[in-house]
Image (cartoon, rainbow, N blue to C red):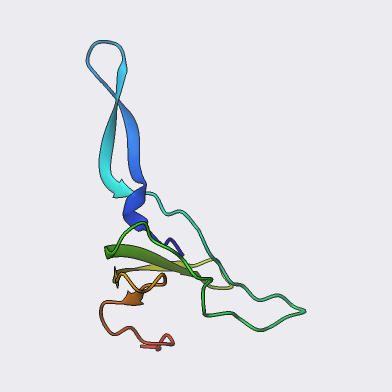
Length: 103
């Protein structure tokens, strides 16, 4: 889980036409894994609640949740959360299912 997805822009170096390179933002962001939960053969439980996270100021943030299955197939979901002055852990700004549903 990346608690502040917009905090790390993806920057690449592109030729500047003078024999050098200059940094340029791709328009994307880099996923930084800040929390994870996984099962082992010895412990089959899976934790679904993250550790508390503080934000520097109230406002809207985008968080990225990434799930990887046993075969290594991953999927990501970008969620917008709103942090209020009296809370350190964000709650989704819209309804999100507590458990994934099969389609």
